[in-house]
Image 1: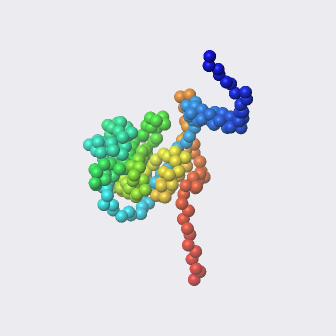
Image 2: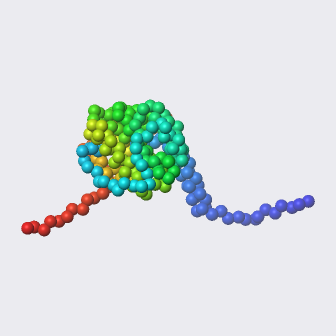
Length: 233
């Protein structure tokens, strides 16, 4: 008969066990917490279209123009995860602009606008759009083009279009923790409107309110402009 030998002694590293248990609980917490409770805020920004924007050198790699549903197939290469959403937005009549790469014919950047009150289904909030304004509610750039000037060039093209249409102001809502977007927009002369939309979600229930403030809360994302000292005459 085969005999099983059981080790007479074994050691347990309680420090390692403690770290493993803590890591496991932390992982479970991070997975469950967003489902049970989540809070975040959107900062409302605005841009006066009368403020001039710097001119960019025209690129030979892409063309910027207004998009239609006929361009939907050209979005599939870089934005396959957004195809259904884009189709619905075109169907609802929202205005879109984008950059099309010359070599491939693919859309490499896209921006969406609402000329009337915009009902954000994801955030369950309706953003008001006043006369003379347009709401910039979505935008995306292909990953391989994020280190180029295509995002800035596309936005400038859009703003000039809306100014020609008689609009005087662009508004948008950005997640207060989206540092990349905030830095870009502040660099392009966007300003805080003094309003935040606060969200608290608990087990599918949501509480939302609009908060007003007078001070500047996002200076950490604004590029400090150097002041030149003038020699006294």
